Image (cartoon, rainbow, N blue to C red):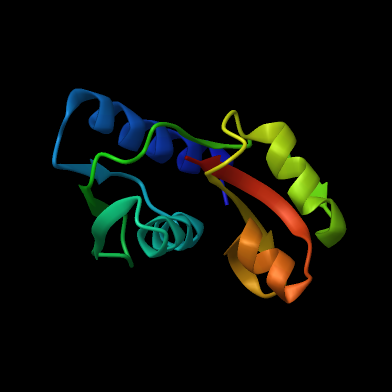
Length: 129
């Protein structure tokens, strides 16, 4: 998975939120991007998203809520163990009270709370708040 693709998509979401748009389109797409957006939807940061034509180049239409202040993909590979996740969250996120770190684990793509609950580590994909 190209992390630049994920980073470009997340920056598109942040720019659309700052401009006050109700929706935005993301191109090109990947399965990891869909998993990242599913976590954002589950946590209430985006309203909904639809994947159009996933077998070809495809695009994703994201319905925005106006809650995303910033979201970024970590472009370098960074492994993290399960007992260091909470410490990593407080060091990485500018807001120490809210926000989520997204981690790819052997159990799939999870946010930091779910990874701690399942006691699994993995590689950090990015964060949002």
